[in-house]
Image 1 (spheres, rainbow, N blue to C red):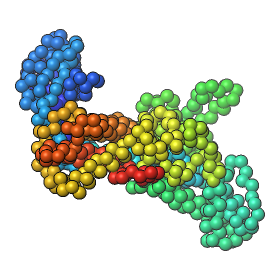
Image 2: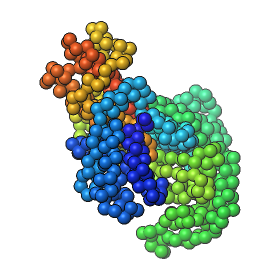
Image 3: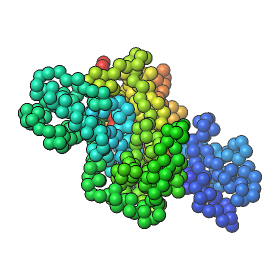
Image 4: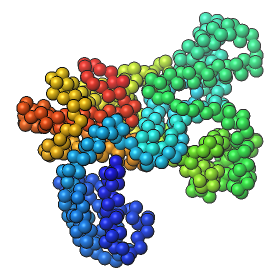
Length: 588
């Protein structure tokens, strides 16, 4: 059986359709639209299919008439307890108890591997995320993109892709000169002991003082006697290296480690800008022209200047894009073209960019150029991360003096813990604003989803530990438990929720929506807590029943499966599963 039970029954339905209507030519694209989904109302069954509705047009038959034929054959499938027609022609399926018990057995055998699949078939995927300019520490919004990119990479790995996690270092632009100039002023301050005012346009954060101190330890006062032409190359190099060390430290605090750091300077230095543009020119996609004035600008403010342009409108963009200015210098877009050219030449046909909300205007041009450079062999999926509104007790959180004008990622993680931070960064779709209240994130109550999920894992651990101490059952003794003894609705509800993980991960990978795994673990915790509470009110439904060792083993097996699935899900999220929650526990 396919580990994704929804795919399993979708395939069964498609085979029955082929058997029922053998003389009708049903193309692959039509059959792919036939689904097996959870019904909105669980009272309607375990699965629902739209097969009859999809087949109406090609069969030229009413959906209910089609459904009647399909239901007859679906009711003959061993794992289907009943198939019923609903509404205009939807089909609801109820699955047999034996199917759910076998599924639980598979979940137990899979352990922490449950949820994995071969969806990606080993195809290479490049996920680029964070890629903040190396000019200072990471802030909270960087942290959101970092977590979303990292978890998306984890999900894609889990479902069978060969994933590379990449960081693009923008170390060739004008911001590096600003960094070097700021560093020189801070260096001068350290060397002379005299307070220096940081002019507007430079980086005011106090973090530069620490960098300046290290620079002074290395260089002494020697740079004070050098000209700007002499000291700027030294400061650029030292500044970039120091900022990257700072950024990597922040990323490590967030539980993130990239596989590759690619330098913009190396892209430019290897003449990849020229090579990429030559490739586009050979395709007839580069020309000299004048762009229309930007929307909202008065014509007398607009200077018509010839520039070198890329025909991005041929690939769905709103306007063609400049790659070289009239003065002969590259635009910001040109190195980005070369960088994606490099990604494609490294063998990546699946390219994912996780960018900040301020990059909205970049989405179409990046997608266009990847399609053009790869001659439609590669696809670039660009995901934007909206800002984070940081709160404390419902009030806007004040900015950090150390950073200069933003709240650092390090500062927030030190207050709430890596696990809580990562968990909450996944609580909404990436393109939606996120409110992050520090007090609520560390609150130990059922209203806090981080605590709620961790508490469910801790409860599982507690039950299994108690059983082991009492000699009732250990993980090895649970092997071969009679799972058919699990017949209560609350037990079956938990088995059904456990079975959903492979589908959740595949859907999250395909849609690039990392919030799906967040929603899933919260729902799973809710179903488990519900079962726990049922046992509290009805002693017959407790996990450990005196005098009934086989039923106890079966229920403890269900607890073990829940513990494993919670941990497996949290592993994908990069959140450590907690076995025991004490007061003021920091979630790692």
